[in-house]
Image 1 (cartoon, rainbow, N blue to C red):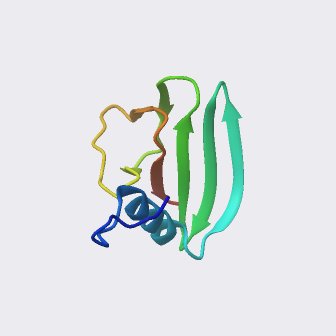
Image 2: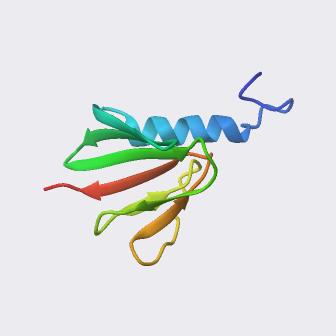
Length: 99
């Protein structure tokens, strides 16, 4: 499957790949967690931690660190309240300052 439409417009998956590349470029892998079908891949970049999170088993709740910013696969901010967010099969990006 191509990343381009018949008229050379970008398909949504091309945008998602570009956002992931932009967020994770020059990052260092820090580790991963897998608990009850919830995947968390941790990276460090420019004094921040970036976590890619998704669930293999329905929607799960993720407790977020204070000051976290959450983005969709398309790079759009996700609003959340109470320091928790629902995580489904579509990956999300969680960014937080570390120092």
